[in-house]
Length: 129
Image (cartoon, rainbow, N blue to C red; front, side):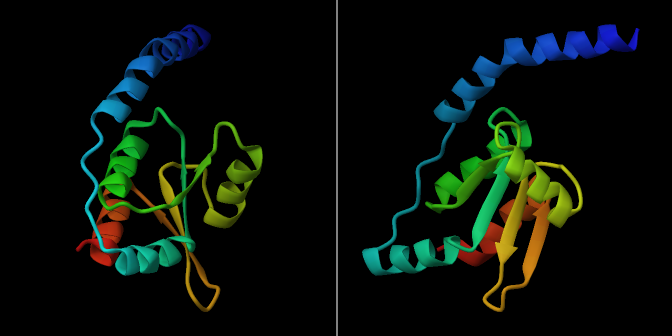
């Protein structure tokens, strides 16, 4: 019975994947506009950030829409396709759960922020105009 349930959800994910990707692309909000010097500062700050995600996760889509709205060039690490990213998330972050934002502070300390709402709140506080 357990195998049947797993197969059912695997099939459901395969069917829904194209729709999730289309939704993610069509529902992107308009990015905010900054002047060039301000955007350069934001770009520099975003080098410290990495979002661990996968493309069809609804919570990841929610965070990526906010990243797009705030015009943030945050590196994306796909934990389904990149085994190194997955193991880094598990070993350093403590669990394989997406979305997860890796924040490297100026002093080199690393913070792992889980939960889409917490990530959105952090990004809005740090980068909203």
